[in-house]
Structure formats: structure tokens, C-alpha cells
Image (cartoon, rainbow, N blue to C red; front, side):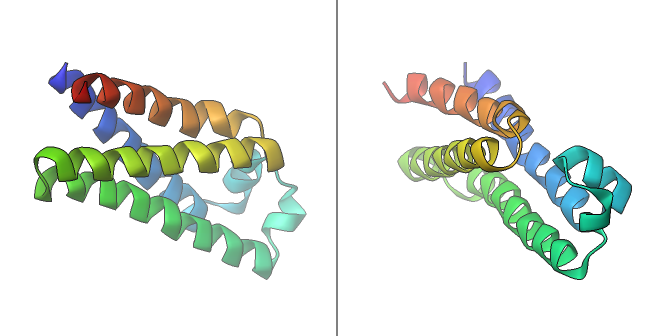
Length: 123
């Protein structure tokens, strides 16, 4: 079960690094399609800045998940991982209610499944 948990954690981390790449470096056309925003909106400077800001957050989530697996052990690793996964689930719920429903399924569900698997390891 530890191997499955590790794979899931790495998946969530890499997913958030990919989202960061899309938000920060994706073409406006790709961003428009991925986030359900009008292309004319994505071309605006404030939208580019907002996407870049969201990209930094997603990237830092991915990096922190990875670093916590490499630098921490035992209970500190489990607690840090659990907190990050819960944070991702909460943000995905908000995003699905405010932006696009698929956000929960694409970002929140993998984090929720990973969190539940982590809980089975703590019991």
C-alpha cells in the first residue's frame, strides 16, 4: 500500500507542476480551452497576471509535495502531506463552484483519493 500511496502523491505533485506550466507558459488558446475562459479575456494583461499567480501557487504545491516526500520522514511527512492534500481538495471544491465544475474531478479527486489512502496508512 505504501507504493500505491507514493505513486498517488507523485501523481498529484506532477499534476500540479503541469497545471503550473499551463497557467504560466501555455498559449492563450490552450489556456482559454483548459479553463473555460473567453480567448479575448485570456489575452488581457490582468488575466495573464492572474493565471501566472495561480501557476505559482500550483507549482509550489507540487514542489512542496515532492520535497516533503524527500526531506521528511514519519509523522511530519504524513501530516505535511495530509495538509497539502486537504488544501488541494478545498481549493478544487471552490474552483469547481466558482470557475468550472471539472476542476474538482481533475484536481480535487486525485488529491482526495490520495488523502484517503494516506489515512488508511495512519490507522
